[in-house]
Image (cartoon, rainbow, N blue to C red; front, side, top):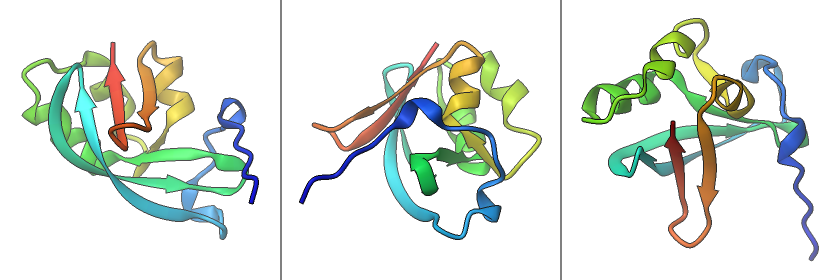
Length: 104
């Protein structure tokens, strides 16, 4: 079965408003350091969001904290990957490790 993903067009719509969402948990690597698992939401059109509370916890636990995270994670329960990237962060999925990597 063929599956097609287009991650380049994700937007900042509120994930709770998307009835087709799917929530999964993935390990997070923040600036090269493993900081535990985070909840992700996948919406229609493959829009991706990361749980703000998990991101805050990861930033506090990391010795390589990214200042961009503090500015982005206060306004909603989930932060879109597009918003993280727009702040100058690199966000990628590592399929070999089945994890999310964020660096800045």
